Image (cartoon, rainbow, N blue to C red; front, side, top):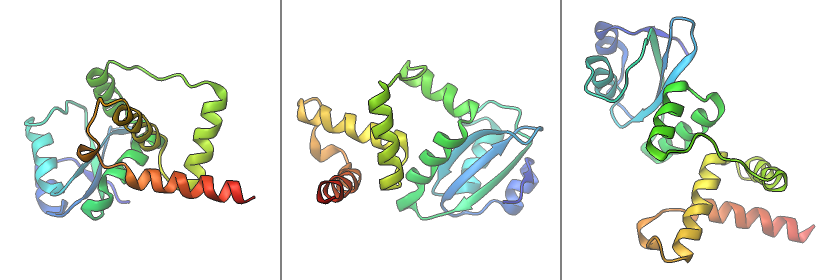
Length: 163
């Protein structure tokens, strides 16, 4: 992906009024932040003008167009893999979690599920925790959408049983 200098003129000229995932880079070409939007141009203007939560030394940006249906998953995968500092800081401030420790056998199973389902670690963990909250009556099942993850995990477990 071609990086574009982070100026208001370039945002107006190159950022699309379409859905997708965008990346903000510092002057050393490190990814600072990954976001998603139904309108990339509008969201980048919000970042640039200080209307959003983002404070950074952004030097350039790029984007990848995708449908709204897959935006969340793509953003989640990219954040999990690239660990941009602003996303990580924002997430830990919102959740109070600096990191989560998994027992080695759980981590091994999680890695297998990532490989077998094509889902990100964060998506699998989030949806399994959500499932447990629903089972405990802490969340209403009609308010969450985890069926896709559960279907992929069930497909894997059924294939494993057949071996």
